Amino acid sequence: MEKLLTEIQYHAAQAPDEAMFALWRAVFALAHVDGEIDAAERGLIARVMEIFNFSEAQRETVDEDLRKAGDVRVLFFRVEGPSYRAQFFRLARIVIWSDGVLHEDELAAIEAIKDELGDDVVQYEGDLRWMTRKPDLPLGEEAQNPEEEMVKQVIYQMISFYGHMGR
Image (cartoon, rainbow, N blue to C red; front, side):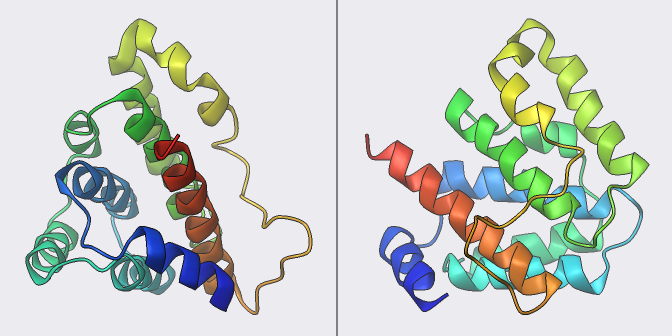
């Protein structure tokens, strides 16, 4: 875990820029879709903000978002570019499974986004195909508890994303 955290800290030494913050806000909004934010979801969001060095202003915005349910569709369409939108679906999968259950409301939010994307949805078919399957850690990795597993999933996903952004 320490090696993973060191690599993420290298890539995310600064607070998320505007584009990345828009992505995180859309992802976090999924935690609210089922009508409540449970301890696992809150824990994951708090760890993400810690690991990725969210600024105080960004933390306040997220806290406000968590008090009032944001419209995931609206927040998704503020995310710019196909690579960031694809990352939304990858991170969304982790967040919606953080409590161990894929709720109908969460899946409905993803379906609404898919419908609104129209023909552009084909760009994300690979990521959407896995939405209903709980993420697994890579072979050889073990988590001590479900929360740690989800945090590790986010870290792996962001390492991959930052790696592709640098190419």
